[in-house]
Length: 472
Image (cartoon, rainbow, N blue to C red):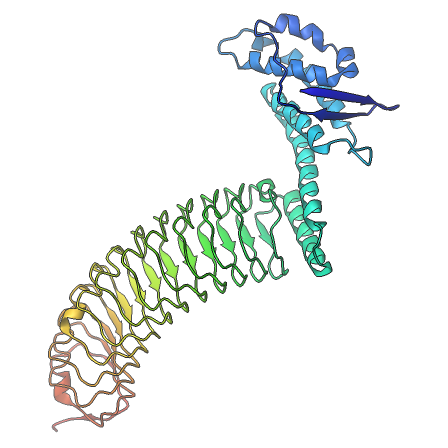
């Protein structure tokens, strides 16, 4: 380590440091007794850098287990204060070319030593000043990046003001929405460790560099919706161990590479609605063991490959509506043992395999409305013993086989409206002992004989535009 000290005609000092591959190594046998004379105030004022090197040795002594020297903390503390005052008086480097990072690094090291001397309040005050200086340097470099447009400069300047304000106020929320930002400043969020909410909605971000959110260990909610993200590189969300909600709705994401969500062990809600995702590779959601709600609606999946939902053992709500699905492979949902709600509406399903819903023993609500189903078989529902709500509205069903719903003893609400049903068979719903609400309106059948409802003694609501035919 080579050090330069420039004297100017004032009580201030400008300190420039050139850090090389070498470090000053002090004699290990040096003790507090022969170090303290080196730290007399006059010597500190003459060469604070040399004093700091000696302070590093003091730091080692203070850390020695069982040392009796710690009883002299009071004297060490006074010396440390003297060094800190001199360093704190160091003016911000100007056009003379002094290295502000080096000066601030020196200050930071001094403050770390001060922590060991029990002077934490004084340390924290100075640390805030140093951090603020470093934050502004990074923000200014980002705002004045070469080649950016005037519009982008204005957007970044606005973001800079908001980030600096959040830092100075120790804010828990930061709103950078709808600023048309094309990139994020590097290494800035580490200065906002108390942040719990970050809104980046409605910008023009095309990528997230690895470690973009490093330092936001307390962040709970992150909104990146309506940007221009095309992919999620591995490590993009590193460090967000407390994140609960992640909104990626309305981007241009086409695929989810394995490891994209690594580190998000606390994530509960993930919104990927309205992207361009065409496939879900096995392991896409690895690490999301706490995820309870996943929205993949309005994508372009067409099918669900085996193992697409591996690792989502806590998932309770899955929205796959409007994803252009044409088929459901056998066991597509096998890994979702805790699923309660499944939305498959507005797709292109024409048939359902007997094993399509295998493993969904906890499912309560199933929405298959607005598909192209032409027939049903009792076996389709045999894996859904707890299902209470089934929506089949807006399909192409013309008839119901005998005991079509025999495997759904817990069903309470059934919607068969806007299909192509002709007269239904007698006792079509007799196997549903708890059925309370049934919708049949919008079907072409002119009559529904009373026999159709034989055995449906619990029925309380019947939505049927066509008149009921009775034998009376």
